Image 1 (tube, rainbow, N blue to C red):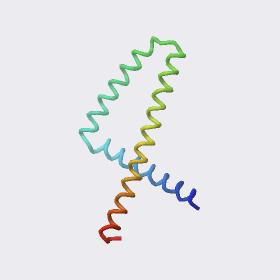
Image 2: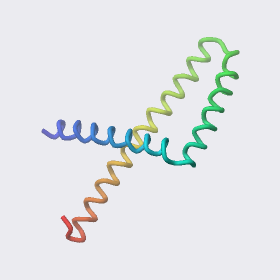
Image 3: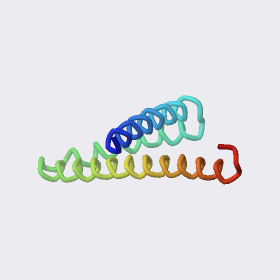
Length: 96
């Protein structure tokens, strides 16, 4: 039962994070500006690594994938803790 709860919570958190990120991308000029800069930098990185051999490119790809994976895990954990904090707060003030 507990594993099923964690799986459902992970799915909910994942869906919610996707929604929030899409909303930010579509409605936040600040985020959009940062994304445009990120796209520019990404093209520059691709240009720089184009001269590397296959093994060196693989190391960089693995590194970037690891960064993305841990960032996702951090974001998910922070979101869940924020949710728990909110529930604790609402219980503490007697709303629930």
